[in-house]
Amino acid sequence: MEKPFEIVILSGKGGTGKTSITASFAALAENAVFADCDVDAADLHLLLSPVIVHQEKFASGAKAEIDNEKCTACGLCLELCRFNAIEAEDEIYTIDEYACEGCGLCVEACPYAAITIEKYENNNIYFSNCRFGPMIYGKLGIAEENSGKLVSQIRQYTKETALKNKSGLIITDGPPGIGCPAISSVTGADIVIAITEPTLSGWHDLQRLMEMIGRFHTPVQVIINKYDLNEDMTNTIENRLKSQNIPVIGKIPYDDAMVYALLESKTIIETEPQSEITHELNNIWKILTSIIYESKKSI
Ligand code: SF4
Ligand code: SF4
Image 1 (cartoon, rainbow, N blue to C red):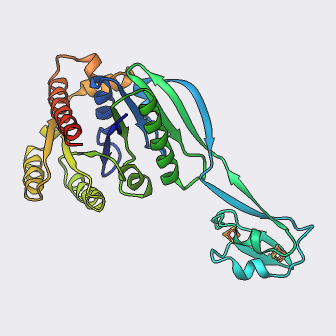
Image 2 (image 1 turned 135 degrees about the vertical axis):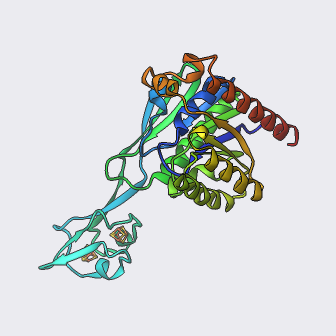
């Protein structure tokens, strides 16, 4: 079975319409599997209303703990910990759980076996079915920071599900921004669709996003959402992208119908099949389908 083609939808910041566009692609796709990797604020499920069939805990880190009954206050762990996570006061040794990186060195080094390490299983991964197909999504636990690892795990499960279901396509709603989770969602993807808006800050966010994606040499196409709110800025963005050889795959107009669809937990493809936005999304999808077809032909 050939590797499924993965489209990742990203944006330089939140609130650009990324999730509504991803959900619309889900409505247009056939035999695809969907992933929501926006683990800090997963909301694709609000639009796709999936039914959870299975869920599991995911440990993204580990924290060490000292048993003061066993500790002889020899000080070795304090000396060794390069994250300065170990504190000593009046010969009582403790570990700062926020500073501990769970490397395990102190556990190995303690001559009195006074330190243990526990995995933190605060994160959840959900396996579900929505009306368009299987969907995997995750939620980062409170105070958990390692969302990059969670994103990688969700993508891995999504690939496995696609292979099991003989689906040739994965559509991933990626995290906004250019941090660790966004980086984890780009590595190994076949194409990134970057969503932006026609504002100066939108352009700056997009530029930063392009720089990040460029490091992985992943092909990228841009969608300008609500393009008609500032057509001058839309033209400027298009021209600047053209000079960088970055294609604009589509321009979506502003329409309240997008918000109303969201309020109904539906995609605009379902609520307003004759709208200009639906027409444009269909055009974009046709272009994407031919890119996927050409890419599979060349394998
Ligand atoms: S190395 Fe072990 S015994 Fe020594 S201070 Fe640390 S916890 Fe206590
Ligand atoms: S597990 Fe590593 S980071 Fe945590 S306290 Fe021990 S040595 Fe420091």
